[in-house]
Image 1 (cartoon, rainbow, N blue to C red):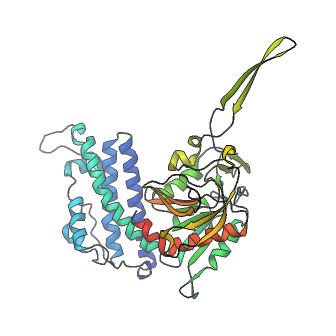
Image 2 (tube, rainbow, N blue to C red; image 1 turned 45 degrees about the vertical axis):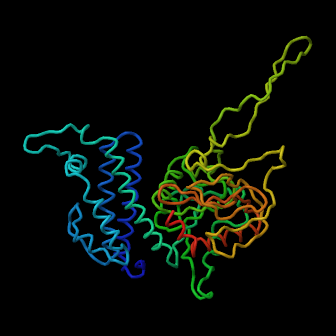
Image 3 (cartoon, rainbow, N blue to C red; image 1 turned 180 degrees about the horizontal axis):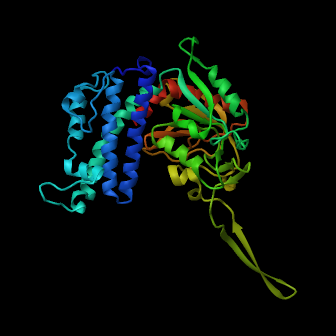
Length: 423
């Protein structure tokens, strides 16, 4: 399949296509959320919205136009280029789009469900099993669009944004906290990415620029240069984290540069950082000592932070390696790191200081680099909705690890995205 590139779309057409595709992804995310809280009517409404924007996005990508209608006809599906969808895919797409009964669509979208004086109970129209079936069927459309979309936004020069430290306004106090990612500041990241070439060192691979969190949806890839910290408004996970999570879930690639992702928030209102963990220390030892014959209770607390209290585990389900003094694992550890197949067949090896690497793989955790002499994975792609969090379990305080991550990002954007697109 040869997929049409962004360069073949005019500026307004390109913006229109991106808008339709992202609305398709966002509506499907809302459908998932509504299903999980038993709001089946709202789930169906979001599925209709998502499926409608699916075929319209591909119509625009095919340099065609559509009539102002909600339902796709077979003629509409034929307008989608065969370079984008095969004939077999078109048959399946139309089958999915034509399966939604009118009564469910009309009730969910317009509040109408009476016909010739006959009324059906909404609880009969919307039930869990039928809604789950529709969710899975539209999921096929979403995965197909995501694959096509990835091939689009990884066409060089790739729009890559580096978090500037702001949420939205220049009067904020920008993040200046770089735990385990101090070798390069945000503006230096941008300048280094601008100098990366491809195709015999002739063309720029990236179109890099700084961005506040409020504008990250404009970019194919986002770099968080602040390591374990990120800009936030307030002390808890607020609009900053929610915007990042939404960006990833709706198809974005978010690279976190160093350490345990999302461990600290930087409040742009006060200019202070805060550990994002809520837990009650457990009691590890209780002793009764006597002072002048009076019993004194001494309690020793275990201050080890449980992984479940951190955003990386709670939201993304990723298990990482923490300090283990009994096994001589304290702080960054020097180890040999080998690239995985997703980044190319040459699979280079190098030494690196590993810190907070992933310890478990799953269907949603794809290794990009692994430790050669231990069972951990310093750099992984964590699938979250339609996008990926790139977790970097290394300490980027020195040039070696920084250049290693730059190489991984470059390889991921040249070849690795094809694996992500089909995952």
